[in-house]
Length: 168
Image 1 (tube, one colour):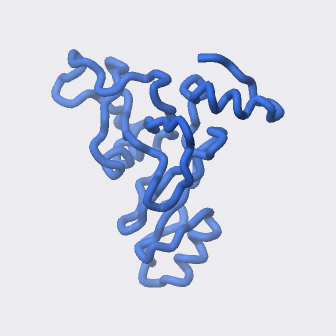
Image 2 (tube, rainbow, N blue to C red):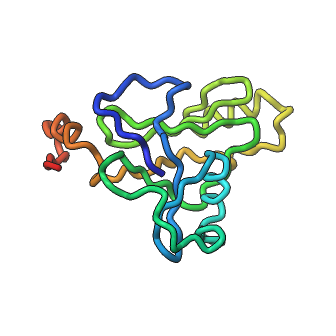
């Protein structure tokens, strides 16, 4: 998945998630293909190990939909994370220092869930959602790809211990 990289990070809100483009890499040609919706992306991701993604209808000969480069900040999600339960929304937010992404779920009622403990408490308080289990949620964060972090962010963070600066 790729995130459009702003030059100046803006404050985040529930209406401004960090992910600008959903994409997956073809197992055969290794080209990146845009995925139209988060729901479609999560469907592919949830079964990726069993059913690796391949370009549709033999389009491996077509140019890539999106190139992996530093024109945007990339974050790679782990395969086989569960699909977000129906009625809930999973949102990812890139931290201002580009150190990682935070994962949140929003309930059908709009409540923000920040952890498995929050999920468990919410489900206990809402027995009508008995078909939804805490294991249907994953707070695993995508890995922010260091080679796509803007050099301005790397320089701004270079004073922190363990963060190396580089020029791009």
